[in-house]
Length: 312
Image (cartoon, rainbow, N blue to C red; front, side, top):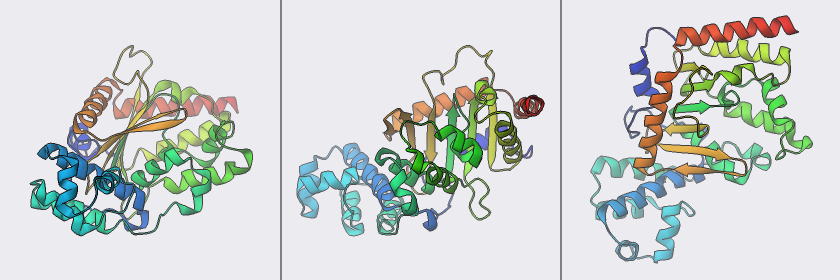
């Protein structure tokens, strides 16, 4: 990361405590995903209704639909018509600027799905994340075992996915291409703002062998010099911190509320309620404070590059 931006300033950009519509950026249409957009709109509808303490049946009656249809709208399982979204949010007493933001999202939920060519190799539970990741303006990731997918080289990803129980051998090459297609760190038009903290063990795990790891760490060293990336290593000597329960990701959007994402072996949790997201944001802040500085993290990468080079 460039030294022109200090830690506090970058944290506010990448992982603010309150994810909202700040920033004025527009979501990239080339990364549009209708299911992800419906997911975000549905959350806004449910959260606003619950905040207004209005029953689902009363809200459905207001727009002349059944409670079942409103339930589907709130879960993102069906298309939300912009005029119905606007009517509901006005009924809930939502601010005009927030109504406009959510209605805009609903109006763009009929675009194509950018990841469609890779759909056959993406697990159903993961497709929502891929869509949301493509819409995100900011991302924070705490990784405890391997390097973040946004920062992986093709060879590293191939070695990592090659022995996966979830990926048949015949789908490996396409799965790696899908992972590379998700990467947005060096996009010149609208790069993803990424803040990442990884455990020191992730630098030492010889995924793919010495050559693959050396090339991966050289790639990592190149990436962390970019202004849109903040990368820190948390040393093994740090005995206790809020990342110990496991890896997690926080996605921040220019036009929607943020979410936290926690993956497990056969699925994932998408946490959207404000207290939950705020808790993960506080955990991210605490982890960053306990991690090494940017300069120390860069030096840790350089040492591993030298070590893996000696092993080739």
